[in-house]
Amino acid sequence: MVNGRDCALGGKRWWWWGGEVGACNGVIVVSGDSGVIATVSGGGNDDIGVMEVNGSSLNEKKVTVVFVLGGPGSGKGTQCANIVEHFGYTHLSAGDLLRAEIKSGSENGTMIQNMIKEGKIVPSEVTIKLLQRAMQENANDKFLIDGFPRNEENRAAFESVTGIVPEFVLFFDCSEEEMEKRLLGRNQGREDDNIATIRKRFNVYMESSLPVIQYYDSKGKVRKIDAVKPVEEVFEAVKAVFIPSHEKSVSSTTVNMVKNKGYEGLSTAANNWDLK
Ligand SMILES: Nc1ncnc2c1ncn2[C@@H]1O[C@H](COP(=O)(O)OP(=O)(O)OP(=O)(O)O)[C@@H](O)[C@H]1O
Ligand SMILES: Nc1ccn([C@H]2C[C@H](O)[C@@H](COP(=O)(O)O)O2)c(=O)n1
Image 1 (cartoon, rainbow, N blue to C red):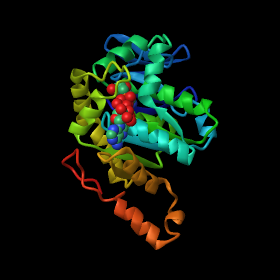
Image 2 (tube, rainbow, N blue to C red):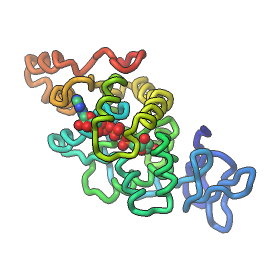
Image 3 (cartoon, rainbow, N blue to C red):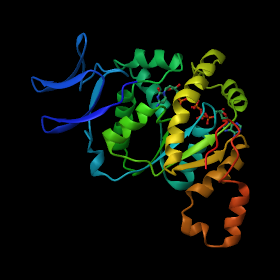
């Protein structure tokens, strides 16, 4: 994967990756060995592409973003629904936005569908544009972004293009055995909930997504939740993360009770590395 780079051209800033960037007849293009490969209006892929930095009106609105990460089937969507109800966030699932894009008959639909079937990660520019649009179109200023960033390139491109750094990262830590059982029992007609694709999704998660969680952990931003427990118990731990710290210190008894529920310092069931 080629890391993106920032440059100024035509009075604007651009985030580009792969090839060489330049302006041609007023259009920003990235060219590779076989000529022009990507332009701002499309044509990029994971290896080569270009996006405008802060090219949306998002920077006019100050938003709070919490990334919700964890393996496939760890319960991200289930808990996001609870968080929306209790804490007034808007839930944006990257997977749902991509599936809606397929249904809408967009020009990227077939490419997205094939990548999801293979358990692969869709090029960042596609997913970031969908997330940006969803945030712009929503009047709320607090967003749970579920299932994104899925790899280092997703993360770096999102932060550069939108200028948004997450408030924190909610990480659902779940064993592969439990996730597999849940996905096979989900029964929502998802094309990727079959054993062959599930295995591919687990591999991509281990290889590409865990490093993102480790990156945010090194910045002190990860709030790890033991996601193997029943839904209600998981939500108790989630609540302890979202309740503002002044409310937590209202009574030391409450704090101790919350701690006993284990919202911090849990041993990891799914991975052989430990988060703080
Ligand atoms: N704590 C839990 N215990 C048992 N089952 C759960 C729990 N949390 C969620 N489930 C069930 O597991 C399945 C997967 O949950 P969910 O869709 O929330 O996971 P997810 O992390 O969003 O998955 P994906 O990444 O594939 O979108 C659903 O059928 C859900 O009802
Ligand atoms: N940042 C993302 C998020 C999702 N996808 C694709 C690949 C996933 O397997 C699929 C389903 O996502 P889920 O609903 O399980 O979160 O969507 C992606 O490419 N990039």
